[in-house]
Length: 311
Image (tube, rainbow, N blue to C red; front, top):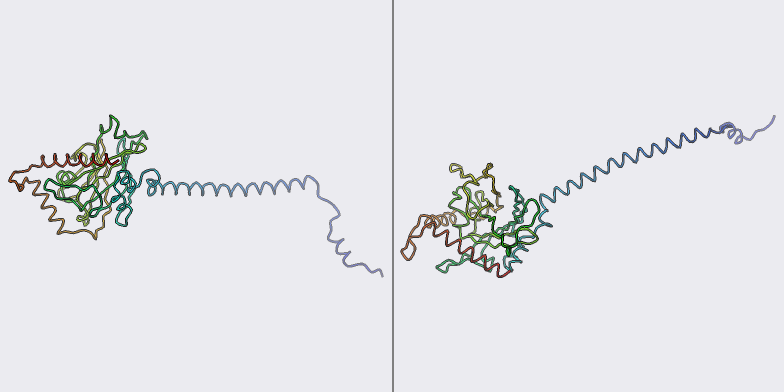
């Protein structure tokens, strides 16, 4: 009986005596390559939308919260251009609020950049005829630009001021026709850089009214425009007139409700009402709303001129 090597028997039994045809080999290779291409294609289709979606999310986030961080000057930088180191420091403090909210009206784009309130924040403090200095103030910085991207005229250009803007806090419950930056000891500084018009508007501190909505209006014109906004005498609510064809941006100022002070607010309103009602001053002469507005306007121009010279 012949003895066979078991390993050899198994090798012979399991091995094929024929080789696959070349065409079959090529078909197998082709199918493997096709499968790999399909797999890579699926991976790419997943990656591209994911990257695009990420880009959209990033762009959306930038447009809403960080757009002004790279396109516009920061509030403290506007104050630095005005050579107001104290106000620049205030806009960098914890008391300041950076907003960066944009609204587009007609051919203009309006952005509320930031707000800060407090005492003796600026070196340019308002002084009335009696020598009383307004120490407790609110400062709001806005950016105004042409929606089509064309630059705003520089302050030294002949056409500067041909399309003026009125920027003012408005307080819910108070008729904005009478209670606005004109009667609230207002003034402003304005500059243009890189085609964007910046304004620092200031008035008496409005934080005392923080227990109710306080708005910031930006409209075309020099004074408050009753046609641009609606005031509901019953609710005290102030809103945009949606049918108004001009500029009537309206922002809600982010005030700290904890800083509201009803007693101070009532006393302040009483003083404003006395002025609006034309009560006699210390000289015994009666003052009118028109005269008051004229005096404040002159004061605004004087402060603005001082800031321009500082620039």
